[in-house]
Image (tube, rainbow, N blue to C red; front, side):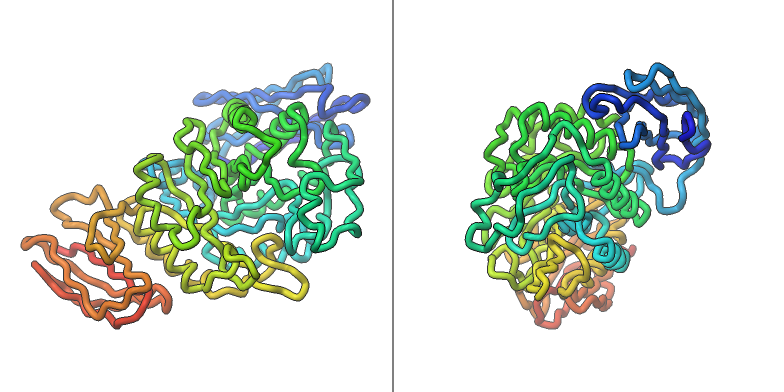
Length: 509
């Protein structure tokens, strides 16, 4: 290979990758170090590199400014120090930079463009066949989803008994033929026959994963990376401290330069019984120190909430805690944590045997609108029975439910909000409502009301006697908007007496 390889120009918030040769005679994952120092007029960052197999080391960097940069790569991986320079050009149209928390409860890209998460869960889609992965990307391209949660490690659970296409470590897995439905849960974390070297990664596994992260980035979709989880028969959830820390450092070095990465420390952290609070705080400390781009960070629960007030947590990644109430708690959690509320798991549209996986499409959409009008953001998943056990929630492929098409309508409404995000407001006892804060007083206001499973035939509104307001009736299920008139003072809006209706009211003079 060449002594050094890298692009001489890169757009802002894109990935610059510097490739250099190095030692591989010992264990290159543990015995050698590599770090890059990147400098421009306005920034200086040091990023760890990683070993990528076949004597190749890489350092990745995401520039934040449009100007010339220089870099220096050094470490024990080589006796040489590598230097170079490159220019950063303006970002393309769909490149708005990393997503950040904005106005306490909402999100925006680094260039200031509002970002309204409409997420889905697809745990191990990147570990399926190439053909199935491509089908998943095609489905995503035709959807409203702009965030997807998925795992680095393979998953072991009902409908998830296949082996992945690759493993993160050198070694061999247990004999999958021993698995049956009856002993499924006996194998979690401790299936016999696993032989892994937790000090030697399989670069091919991570290359495949990060290719999908880049594919998503090019599509404008955020990659909510689940770094750990408990559904495991291979032993990856039960590694010791040394192996865990090596893994975290390696993952951050490989992925942090991608602008669309979010860090989810775990899916259902409280089911990982071999980890304690000290472990989770140590992982968080590693992220905060090693991710020089300060990507969004959270941790997901099963039953017990993590303390989302912890300063390292940027937003709340929440699974419902009640069979019936889900989005209804968003107001309370906003007040309690003063951070964006993302309901990453509010149960799934589908028809499997479990209560968390057999919502109707109508109920899924209702929960999304309920969360939206309470100032939060909901997440989707789909678990319809399939003769080949290909369920979107883990494997991807095609969507079969009724809710995804309705999310396009919701995202349209969110993008039409005149300011960044909606703020919940006090309204009548039988409605959930939000307003757009920050609109000048002489502009009156912007209001959104949602009636869910109620079916009123009309509603009455009053704001003041000075301004004129236009009302629109929105059928959130049939995805229609009907103008209801322009009013002043106290006024009545007629409704069709159907479920899932919303009313949008805007000051027009």
